[in-house]
Length: 452
Image (cartoon, rainbow, N blue to C red; front, side):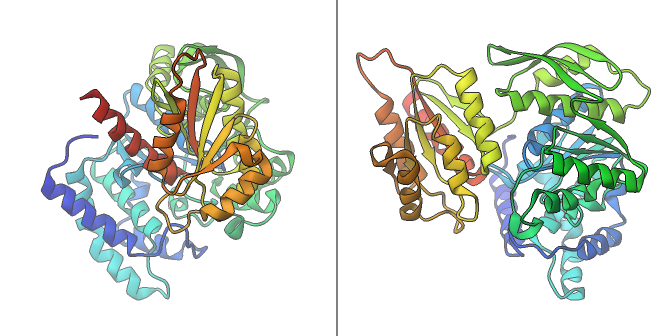
């Protein structure tokens, strides 16, 4: 993050408060009417540059970051829009791989704020937080200007605010059960909504999908005449080996085989994310061959905050934003196969509207003990209910409680100090993006004090 002056910071805080005063991100009125009218009034900034649009359930943000890094290494000016954020909402809008400059954000907000108010009067429901920040990103990218937009879907696809783009390439990461209150109770219904980003005559990259999802995605692609590249058929991860600080991959693209790609992220799922990202870029460039050195450099530069991220060593503290069973299963697999802890102390603070039991069942395989806690969101699951559920799965001797994430981290760090023991102990903090964002700030402050 670049340093922000106090005046700019207070303006940024005021903008965030103004946006948050709108409909929250978790409340949605499934329609594109408002955002379509808004961008139309702004002069359709999202159509002034080509875009790659990334949907699915898990892996969207990391794949977006990979695509961004690759395009930037290939000499393009990039704009990346992702959600939610970990520590600052400026992270959602990135230009050339860096969070948007505070002054640029203030300029774009001043540019569009009158239009937001105008739209509020025109429709029964006001412009939501997510619609406003999506429009803000589109306007900021057009202002910069960028050569290519990398746009992550917020939720769903068909009626997601980002779906006013006309994407050259759509990417759909693995689909799982999440946000069922909006997207439907079955994988088939969810896949139908997520398939809504496949554009007429466009190109779609499909990561590995459950059979019932694949059927719906293929149907939609056929309906709109989109070309398809499927993981395991038109492209694949040929080989993957765990390396120090990440993994080494060979990827079969749609045209070439790309060898010796080092990705500084942990987990088999990151190899699939990398393959999808590479193929999306390959397709975006059309007949032009990709420079293998730029591909390697792009992947080597990738960071993915809060995704199996090691934020401290001695003790090793790992943050992971898993908030559904699919994400928790990938995390458990990574901890088992790529780390050599003798013991793992877990800190778990989920939202109450998630499949918490399903997540706990996955985490139980890798956490020796778990400290259940709550983040600062009103949507956080109540600790007493969480404790009962955890005891049912872990047994009472393995479950502890802590009122806040800060006290949970203190307890875990204290518990990890074992004089005269040879054991390596890991602390794993997970459950939601909000929890991981808060933990990231707390861990940084906690250990900064010790260094001084």
